[in-house]
Image 1 (spheres, rainbow, N blue to C red):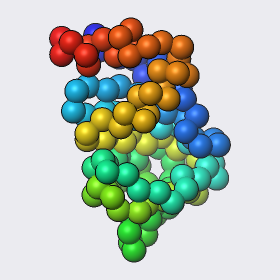
Image 2: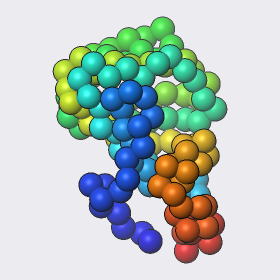
Image 3: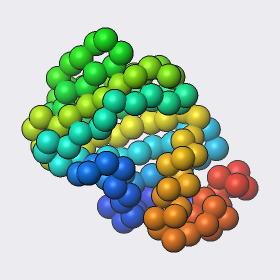
Image 4: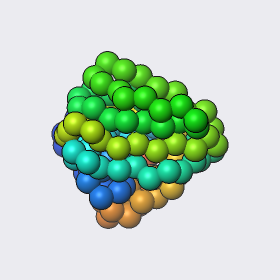
Length: 129
């Protein structure tokens, strides 16, 4: 299916107060985040490149040694394997994250959460259609 309504997708809690709805293709994945005020994304890194756009609210984001306060309209880019973290300083916040390649760990957790399997939830990813 090529079209999605984010408000109709199940939301998986990634961290306390931080929920994500996923849309994934073969090589790119969108993660639409809903973040409560004070929500924290703990320090972590991953082998995926990550870009993001703040849609609503304010968050303090640390990428490597650089830290900034981001507001709606601000974008960011996190290179692969760079440690990063964030906290919502005025919320709720909404952020659109884009990952490449697809974070299979998120897809697997999302599939388990929604009660669907890879063949049913992500049929388009498997077939390329």
